[in-house]
Image 1 (cartoon, helix red, strand yellow):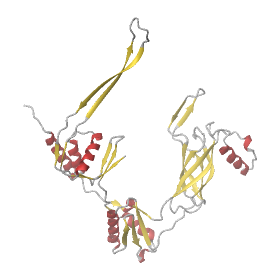
Image 2 (cartoon, helix red, strand yellow; image 1 turned 90 degrees about the vertical axis):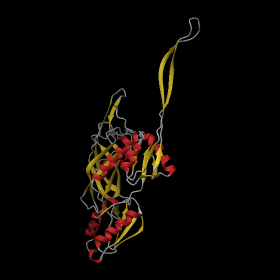
Image 3 (spheres, rainbow, N blue to C red; image 1 turned 180 degrees about the horizontal axis):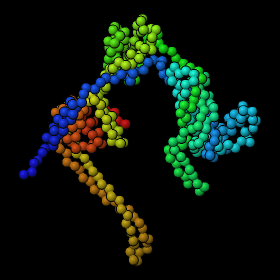
Image 4 (cartoon, rainbow, N blue to C red; image 1 turned 135 degrees about the horizontal axis):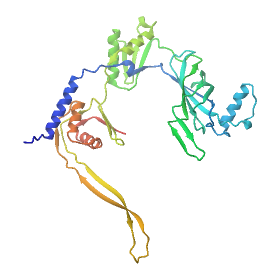
Length: 373
């Protein structure tokens, strides 16, 4: 005798299995404050420079480009060679922009990774060498000097007939450790007060950070003025070792608060459900409409005595089918695992869940923010 299992029984079993799996997982630990907030004033600084890449195998900028000939003539003049711009034909040279980030408290002699990007008509930077180029900050001060052989993760080749083949992006290269710091990075450690800037502003998370700091320091040292920052008064005994105090604070663990949010990408059908999303009791029925379109080609010939031409015409066949929707009652889902099991009982595809989530929010059964991309 065949055994018939109802859809609700399968859904209940799936929800029970998911709940058991969640219960078997140990309680999640909090996040370090280091991953939740940054110390005000302790940040990197962007550096930029304009220079030349030489040694290219005919894949450089257009030989008539003034953006290459002018700085190349100036470079040669500094090296003791006087050549006019009109005499230069530099297809093996490319004008580039160099970017890097100066870490906080970087000292002279430290090495930085740099990114070199073509600014002209160069076809490839593979095999090129960056000539010594000063890197300036937003204050136009020179903080580093860059030079070195480029690493380009790809290739490009072409034939005389105009055909070409390329892999990856060959007009951008990197030079690991290609820049040397020449002067210290601007910035200083705070002395009387440490300000922690939250990467995601939230009242609850900020309050939990302040409570954790007070518990670790043994007093009321932290305060929350707004959801974006936590102010920590430096104790008198720690003012001579602020760096050590910051390290202690960054190592403290706090459980951040997350909003009830569902992110929907309709282009790819991707749906991400946050851990705080809850589903109230609701009855759901969902049916899908499927439309099939088949295209084929056919030959249309005129009659024997007709004055016409044989033509190739397109023939379209259309068909539509609507799936039957089944009403499923959901008693509520207090966890993400149970929410997934309850919606899976509908047999809905990821794209169908977009309409289901919108309908559940309208009736008040879904307590979450929907973000569409």
